[in-house]
Amino acid sequence: MNPGLPGAGIGGLFYILNALWMPICELWRRRQGHAPGRWPLVARQFGIAVGIIVAMSGVFWALDTVLMLKQVAAHAAGQMHALWTLRVSALLVTSGVLATVLGTVHVVRLCLRLRTVRHAAQ
Amino acid sequence: MKMENLVTGHPSHVNLPGESSETAGDLVTGLTVIIPAYNEAEFVGDTIRSLLAQTVPPDQIILVDDGSTDGTGDVGRRAGITVIRPPLNTGSKAGAQTFALPWVRTKLVMAVDADTTLEPTAVERLMQTFAHRGVGAACGLVLPRRIKSLWERGRFVEYLFAFTFYKQVQDYYRRPMISSGCFSMYRTDLMRRHGGWPGRTLAEDMDLTWTFHQTGVGVRFVPEAVCYPIEPYNFRFMRKQLRRWSHGFIQNVTLHWRGLLTVPFLRSAVAVALWDAIVASLVFLIVLPLLIIALKSPWLLLAYFIDAPAILVPLLIGAIPRREFGRTLASLPAFFVLRLVNGFYFLEAVWSEWFLRRASLTYEKGH
Image (cartoon, rainbow over all chains, first blue to last red; front, side):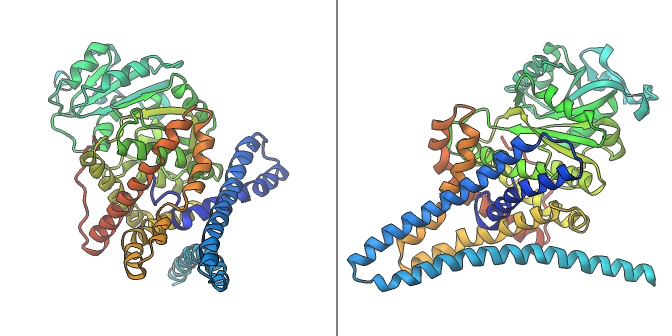
């Protein structure tokens, strides 16, 4: 069972970021004296994350090329700026939504903790 | 309840709850496998054979014949394993597994679906993780056994993607989201303390895993331990399974959300999965079709499979060592179909569970 829709939405970005964070996490664990042996997993997942970023960059590059050819043919090259803006804003929106969802989780957690502390104090 | 009504098979293996004074500390080393089964005569023989062929065979195999009418119990008896039959159908997989728990007298217990076969080293690999005291549950990698129909192909891609990428990341942060119900191993004393497999939601595996995470019990994912269940091969069965899973997910979020907030990583993973289940489904099923019609732009259709290259990266990394490159590529379109259907059932579950407040607790078999 896989909750959510694999690949779609902010889930993909969430797991990419977590996979990119793994080497730093692993270095920190080693410094704390934890046993080694998880580097193959870390390297594999890091590689997958990088591969996904490269693959998606390739998709956007291909889209750009196709759309540019189409627009040049239509003498509408001025719209290229709008396309680029659309792409950047899509990335920003996805990152922003992810940050908002994760931030909301922490805000709710803190609110509940505050309420518990207040109840205990009373 | 008399013994002869419940138990058939090898009497020497049977340890009736009323006759036993065992505590958790008295449990003997080893493994008992519980196979919950309702009308599984067609597949359960393969499951038993794959269990008997393990490099570390289980000490006891209990087949729970949960009111079958197709001779499922006879298959178990012929194979020489313990067969128990509740007086009435328990109504769910969780119920059947919990019914068998008092018969378990080993330190480890494993639940395997009646339609699931295992690679010969699967049991051994899972058992190894229990050398660590903190581990209370472990699960393996799941891949469909038959990959022929559209639905089986879609599920193959979904599993290969999730188990190669998502689940490995979850395990690195020590928070696998689900110890899959079709093939998982647990400490018996822990299961007894929790009263067995919970039947309060339609996804007992998720319920149990999230409870373990909240109580500090370690859950591990072992990708080398591979199992092969029979996945729904037509829409009728797929619909039942998707409905059960979607409702189960929403029910577990409703039940556990406060507790989940205390579990690092898992709280974020669940929040993100929930967001995607709702918002991505709405976008795929409502927003995009409306935009395509309003803007009359066929280019927007690309949005349905624009992430195909991103999906392909972990897929191919998972498929190449298994030599399933061609099959994976050929199955990719089915994944996008399944994702859309999945989105519909997520929205239906959210609407039904949260807005209509109609909790669905009828367990429908997925194949």
